[in-house]
Length: 433
Image (cartoon, rainbow, N blue to C red; front, top):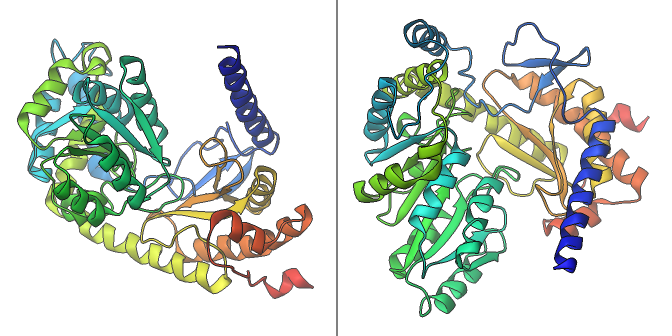
């Protein structure tokens, strides 16, 4: 017990040190100075920055239809509706779930957040006699909800990220011991911006009747797929043993989450027994109004043009990254990018340099990534321009090699740590003078 406590304390100490280092550089726990937000830029400590940290990928947060949805909901229902959904839900909930059921063509339960959805669903769906397999990079909210089941005696196994060979070996090992085997993964991974190997997962589902897939597509919602059904459903049909979680807080531009089930029996069980559906508050009227307005916008087909515009920006970003010779953990057609750097202090140095040039990006370091595998995480949204992207990547190409040299690291060391092909950044000529 003492050893376990010591490990926990050491873990927390490491996290605190990483946060303290980031705080000292002005990279985290910041507040905007803006009196008005346009979706493209933010002001931090009186410094105007192009915002490459927003997950509002389609840039809908200032869409007139959503603002009108908020306004009408507040005028009609006030700022809050203070009742558990077990007792009474605001009528807008019924409309929202109907719109989602039409969108996904499956039973849907709307939750106050994606995280609260996981906490409701997993303890209801996963029972005694089952086993859990986690992808190493599955979102922390999924991992936390799953870990709560360990006390119930549910065994939890973790495999390397997207390692389908190891997943199948684990399934084969567990299938004689457990009634159901649940694999928990993301559709689009929130740190690396890469995607789940969905075709391989479907093949495994079709091969092993005991396998169930619980997949979080929070970062895939809206920006891809018919009516914005997201990355997972744009690539595969809803498998009879798949539960899909999505977020309404990112590209959907409102608040809350939704769970999409393969059948009504499963949806009903979670609706009746999910702890956060019983004991937590609902989405409040203003954001519920925004969610209904966004769902109507998605159903109208109007977002198709927005999706195309975003795809063009993502394609441009990938092209410019390649032209500068900058590394990527994995090249993907998602609006979430990860530039591998390595050790925490080098990562923070690069991001601080870029911030001082007027570009806000996210730190992606331990515990969100493995200790020696930190990097710059940045996102593309429809409010940005190609010129914004070009300027960010030019400054990154300037600072990246300088920070590595300063720390005694190298391109080869980064490539070895992340197991990616060797690379060489093309430093701008002015930076070499």
